[in-house]
Length: 278
Image: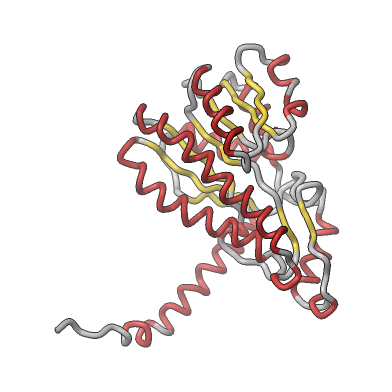
């Protein structure tokens, strides 16, 4: 098994921490990054020579430049994992501008900024793999999860285009779409908007109630998820989009089937809007 060097954002807890632990145990090298470097300081102590812990707030351009530069100077980057993220629960009307910007800054703009910082290195080497941690919420927009869906839909669109742009350079892109997994996403990583009473009995209120009860009870096992992602990277081939968990597969399949049904039902109307040339 070829040893790889992974650059992981948001490595303090959840998927990021499990990624780092799994890869180091398998003999790979890991550049683990987190806003609070103390949360990952144990990794270099436990895996000297294999683990590097760096501070990185993905919303800080200066820290991105420094962290990526340190990773490249100390051995390069074979695989980038954009894992840093945050959630925001609330109907669109309930959200403040500041809350929306915070989610987009991390989930979208931060991921794209780190990707752009790493790409020149991968392009020069004519190899590399970019793993974008999206969500089933990047395919299916949950009522009550509008800002989060915005961030993940946009990340998926950018990553799909990116995959075509960099394929000629031997760079692969994988968009990971997890369903509910037992991570901190519904805990410290989730921000909630102040409720508006009219939404309480509707879908946004239902989602808020479900999420409050689901934390720690999600069916997905993070270790099995990481095994699936790592296996796809090591295989050298695989899908652009990788759903994880039965709930993700079911919800994405239902969404695509409904979308295809609508497409076929209104295809004649859609085509009628073309004006023949000449």
